[in-house]
Length: 251
Image (tube, rainbow, N blue to C red; front, side, top):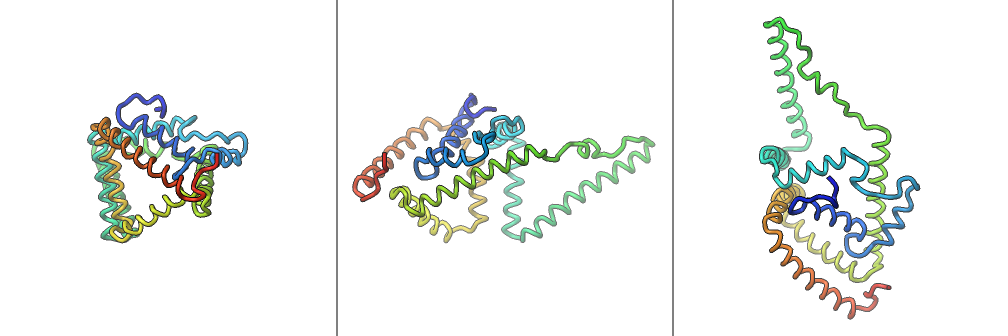
C-alpha cells in the first residue's frame, strides 16, 4: 500500500501524508533545510529516505497495521488489542522479568503439550507425519545484510533529525518554537504527576485503537473543528512573533 495512493476513507492515506510532512517540517517548526542537510550527510546511494519505498515487506506491514487500527477484521484487531492490553496490565502488577517468564512458560506449555499429543497420536495410528511444527521451523526469519544496513540507515536518519531538532529548540534558534517546546514540557510535568509510564502507555494503546475509528466516522466534523483550532493557534502565534523581540523567522 502506498501512502499517496491509498484510496480508503479516514486515515489510510492522510495519516501517511502527515507523517511524511512532519518528518520534513520537524516537530515545532519548519525544518526543510535542516532535513535536507542531515539527509545529505548519509552516503550518496542512500541519501533519499522514504519509509516504505522499495520494500514490499514494509509496505505490507504498514497496510496490516492500518487495517488493525481501523478494525477491518474484528477478530484480528480484537485479539491484538486484547493481548497488548493484557500484557500492559500484567506489567502493572508484576515485574518485567516475571511477565516474560510467565509468557515463556505458557507458550512452552502449549507447544510441548501439542508436540506430545501429536507424537502419541502418530504412535497409536502408526503414521509418520513428522514434526507438527515443521512448516514453522522451515520459515526463513533471518535478516539479510542489506535489510540490516537499510534499517540502520533509517535509524541513523531519525536520530540525527531528533538531535538537530533538540539543539535548535534548546539553543533558541527560533524563539516561538522554543517557547512552544517549553510549554509542552511544562504540561508534561502535570501529566507525569497524574500518570506513570505504564498508565500513559495503556492510554496510548487505547487511543491508537479507538481514535482512527472515531475519526473515520466523524472525519468531516473533526476536520472542521481542527481547522478552526489551527487557525486560532496560528493567529496567536503570529501575534506573538510580532511582539516578542527576535521571534520573527528570518526569510
